[in-house]
Length: 270
Ligand SMILES: [Zn+2]
Image 1 (cartoon, helix red, strand yellow):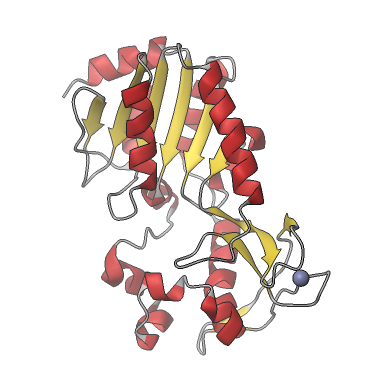
Image 2 (tube, rainbow, N blue to C red; image 1 turned 120 degrees about the horizontal axis):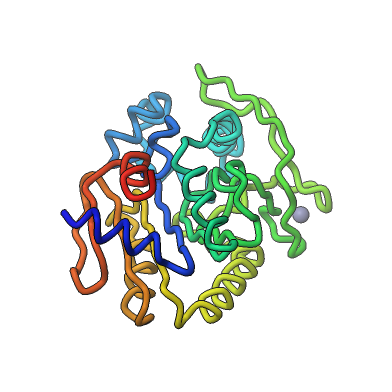
């Protein structure tokens, strides 16, 4: 494997794009919900209900059974708040700092771990939204507000003991996360991030750009496709794909490393 070529490319890059999927959180101790069995191992109460991830992450539960919906998201909210980002985040943050701040993060993760690790909020595109922001289920306004709620969960019964509400109309509030079959997602925040990302890419389009992809799988391929499209369209960009199970990549676009997130990052930067 061409570790030296990768290290040389990253060392001489003028800008860094970090693209991350669920595998990025694994070394911090977060579950990556890989497959229905993996999801159920992480959430035994949902296994008992027989719901797959795609069925649980469905906005209809906020209408039909908010205590169930908020049991799932309330538990995750607490988990993400309590989790400390692994050392790979700091290595990437330091790399971007070493490039004069020319860095951006594109992620499908809703956990806010890049912000928690000290990445600049203005340099993050959360394409599927964030659990740390709320919106009105009824969309009574365009507002998206920070999620300061405490949502305790009775894990035995898998019921939320508190339901966040819209401060304007009193309807149930939901996380500003793009769910499955989700026609009610308020995309205003994600769209604003996407615009900043586009303009950053335009600014760097002729620069030597290292795209470092971590833990982005093929099941929901948004992150992989984004990195591939950029690597294919920008002449000086190369994609470094870090993925323990799915490292395959078109050699014309870059390199694949069959490693976990932290190990892969440390290998090219450490
Ligand atoms: Zn409302």
